[in-house]
Image (tube, rainbow over the protein chains, first blue to last red):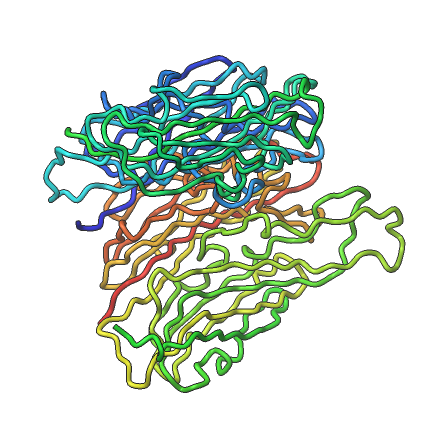
Length: 308
Length: 331
């Protein structure tokens, strides 16, 4: 395939807690209504209405749904909204993905950045655009969080005939309280809902850590906790992928420098992974449970072929 | 396929000390294969160090300097240029460990008048992993020349290293992939003036900045985007990564880009950290994009007062740099 010129499209929204907003499609459509390839999607998020001594990572509370016409890129029980930080492995260290805004001595809200390199480049036909919709949970934080989404890709070789079968990335997601009860995934979670094989690429584990004793709450990623939940995973036929609950095994199963368990597998139509999560007691090495709310956030990333 | 036994790993390095506002080379003999055999260079690293005693405030505050934007390199393999003039060393590779690029943090002291004080060097390392190994004939050298831009009065030592492998005598490839890097550096934007006036400022690159001046197409490895910021009141303090001043690179700095045919590359002004993914300071291309022969990109950089820096009374300056990295094939 002939190489072509690069292209980067972007759109910006402002979103409040509990809101759902569509990214403006004008800036996210190919110029001249030509088909394009999208290789990666980036998100940059920040909020200027900072409060002293608060610390936020927006990747867990802001979620996105991606659709290409009637073709779903993200799909789950929550109307297809997947937390942005659950779409890609961690790249570089935590402080690199969070740039502290204003005076870090005041502990202002940081900017957070994520990038999803798609498992397969996404072909966007002429006249269409990859639609991004954002949803922010009722996190109690300030209004007017800015989200910029960027599509990094390239123009399509003009000699390439219109594709009628394309590779479509896929992401699905489920969450559970980390320190209350046992979570069991159901037939709508981590399933191949399509009539074609689904190539699964990785699980991504994130843990949102919320401290409710401050106003607004202290919301970040609990990557440094001493206690972590344990996992068991089976396939559709009951074969063990992870056989036993091992306390703290989350760090071993999901490479904690990347928050990801990468593998190469195919789920046939309607097959699924069954996930069980065993909670841990307390957070931050045994602090009182009541001041912290931790959420286990697990996503499955893959791709499939679609007729267009 | 080459016999792996005959391909031996090799590391070559050389060092120089650059005074402020000077250019200088290194001992080229140290960068030549000592076995007088051809070799392939796989990656190039730059370690920059600025020793010195820094005055620091009580409590932990960032001090020290980001040096990747202060030192530029020009590299040639004989008659073949590998860079478009001087390119800031931080514009060649992607950021692998951005935290380590941060300035050294100060420590708490209570008596700044103490003659002993605290002394620690600023050291940063940047790596350019070549997309294709660079063939270097026997007894040839990739010759670097460095430039200290003079933004600080202190001298900076530069240590350049080539990760390479030795090849058998007489080995000749059918074609050679020549890496290439070009960069556009803006002027120094006065952020205090932008804040006070409330008027954004822009600068547009020229046809000779982000250019492919060759007859071969340039396969693109990446674009890089960096923002050097420093405090004019304390010239020993500069920043780019994760520190208070970096908010400007996140929201106050934006870019749009077109190519020489007028085709939009970045059609509308886009936040710098969105165009050049914040975690790696780069837009990775994976060799799927190409730049036409004898063509260029025009980048327009816009600086706005969307976000004010922490200390409004000091004078802050910002200089953005956009890098273009790729390779071309020659027979």
